[in-house]
Image (tube, rainbow, N blue to C red; front, side, top):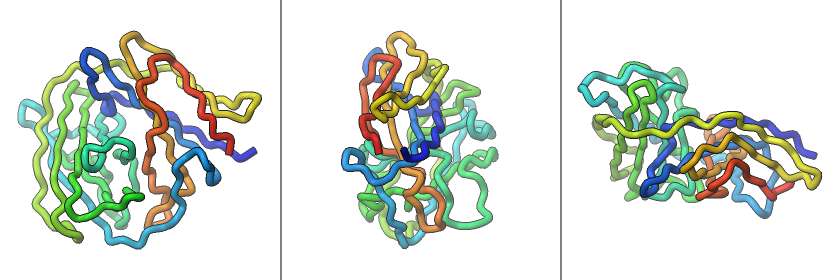
Length: 229
């Protein structure tokens, strides 16, 4: 049986409203060998770095100086949330600030997107959440060229109703070799589950931390990953 590394990360910054209900993203970090039932990438891409950097302010106009895990973000392309990267995504350059630097600036390496890779004409969306103030906002921009030279935009957050964090997350293996993910379910919460492959590396050899959606609209407190590789 392959070794499994699990890291469950839940954050209300990855939550979006569906009518009167909330969608909760549950992230399971797995080390997977190529599996026919899961979309996996293991090739290193030699594309040029595209670091997407912007400012973020609270609703009162002050810079958001909070850092992860209090402040978080989720990034996706072309309004398609089947693949996402987050504030834990690796930087391709060396010696740079963290993706959330605590000085009102955030950034992310868009080269971590793969299959498809980032392309001219793509729209970039960042959903940023400050859990300290209960604020959230979405910033978007269009990739006009690669390299992508631009002046940073400013995202101003707004007060929103955020659902509670999930609790008691556990990952076990059943008698069939399937991964069983469980958590404490809250009423009126639906869950979205993402997986990433640690072996999927980026330009600098670090894990790309590109998450692929494997389930959505889960109304309970458990999920069975039928991929046994």
